[in-house]
Length: 205
Image (cartoon, rainbow, N blue to C red; front, side, top):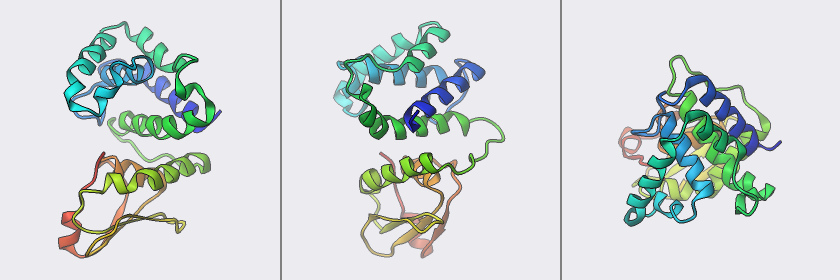
């Protein structure tokens, strides 16, 4: 299996363990809401655009709420089974590109919202997926930052996410950097740069 399928199944196992009302790091969402979001994005092309486009968000929210009202085992089963065959991400390579980082981040959203969480041990495939995603979305994630941002792994991989004055270097394992780029704070990273520059870093998709 690829990282996308591994993270999907691991997240679903965690859903089974925690139930529908466990906290997540997605603001305002319990596990039920996150599961409903994941089903919506793979089954409702009419509602998926509202995830990114605010004028369509009302319809998206109504559809998501309807999914969230389903029995928990049914909802988790829909996440686990994935999209229908005609869905673009049913194609393996595209699944890895799109769903690898999606399920990796949302798996961590649930893991890290629980007490006493700790980073998982490094994994070459998972780290490669995270690093590839950082290279694709880094500039978008840090586009509003008024200072330069360089992302650096302990192994020496480097991504210039934002060119600008007083650059800040953020160092961490690839999954930690990806999670930070997505706007999460429950991360293990270190910062190097002027204090005024550190205070100015902004990110999030």
